[in-house]
Length: 592
Ligand SMILES: Cc1ncc(C[n+]2csc(CCOP(=O)(O)OP(=O)(O)O)c2C)c(N)n1
Ligand SMILES: [Mg+2]
Image (cartoon, rainbow, N blue to C red; front, side, top):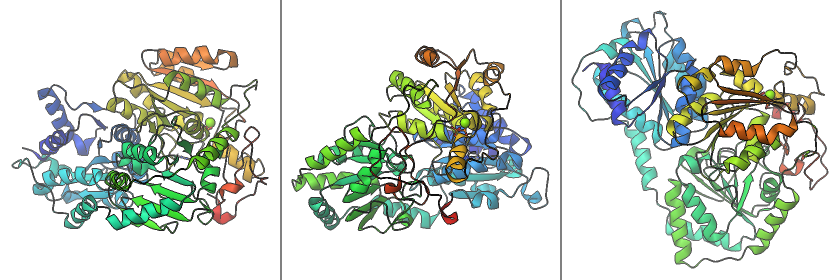
């Protein structure tokens, strides 16, 4: 077999059922091998072509986020490869398993500034979980298998394969099995899989819980990535411990469940943030005290006398905040061990006072906005969509205010429905991620909640939606500019809207969608039409596009400014606040 055929056979053996990619000279042998594989295998591995390789990377990531399986992108050397740097870094930062396969110039040409050569190992080495430059064709097969293993095991992440063209054209014998040795990595993985929670650690954990009056679970993306959402639900319900989630942890628990206090952090709900301020025992699960949650680590959960931290990655323990108890291992094993221990010991604690407190916080500091405004408020639009989709749709987003409104106002009954660029905050994520998600979950309703600026970044992918006739619903909350940037400029730069206003731009999004083949492309600009237009949009059978002209001045509240504690949270005009807060410009050192 040729190297290219071997690579494609390993993809098939790994269960790959969709590839996202764009062709070019240095990847031609693999594209040809995919073509022949599909010709001979009933199109088992369709190749989905984006407008730009960044789109392919985010499609692979959207596929992975929606399914938990490894997403695959296949691109050419040089510009093809460098166009995927952003999704690779994005996937690293959010722990998403993808494999990006790049063509490379022939081994003899590497380092000569050959046509379409880029130093992929050094560029990607800085942003990926791992990079392989395959120079020995005899190791190609084992390397591809190992790439999948590294992407999906431990803390998941992106792995890049740089495959020179002569390695693709090489001929050899396909072995059908075998991986690279990677002894250090595999030892670590084996240790993680074997890491049982000792009885003594369980005893210490429950001793701390026993004396707690106000325990709170703080659940992050690791709960979802580690497929531990059900175990978290069982654990929280067995002991009746309320849960807040990070942006990445949304859906780990059913957001409509009485124990869910929804999202915490910079734009978390006021009731979540106050509850975290009030808790005396914090259980951090697959969360990493990121600056959007613990902007001021010393003040974060400042009343907690006991903090426990569970993570798959030992380097996260104590990185930001000192904790009293920690466990590095598989979260679902640990939660099941604790549940079993607690039940065996008959652990019972009456936290009804704390539950009533949380209930009262939820009622008093509920999300709210100017419901009687004459303008279309973005929150209203999301509430209306949510009424129809009931927490069952896959929601993808761009980055900005619309992303935070979606996080705050949508319900999510299950994990892997909320797909957003959390750590990197990459504008342009929403549309390609929706495409990838729709390929992973063919029967699900997929909605991209996008911003007028974010969607511009990968607007070429509108055409990809119609080319593959994906019934994706694309909605642009148009506030004529970079709303989130404006919000910070209003708060911290005396309202000087440097380069963030697009109200004089003449782009017609509806015409753009129509030009790309959308049969349903509508602009909504009258408040009275919101329920009807949204229902028509959501119920439309094929690809649908909706631009909503929202209140340009709508803000994201609550907001905890960078570097600040939750007691400094600004709640805006429509949510009460527990404290009189003065808006302070953060120090230059905190200004990000
Ligand atoms: C690729 C990229 N460039 C710049 C930014 C900085 N940024 C964050 S939000 C934002 C504005 C986003 O505007 P839009 O998509 O319209 O969303 P809105 O805040 O208006 O809802 C910008 C420029 C970013 N997050 N990503
Ligand atoms: Mg905008």
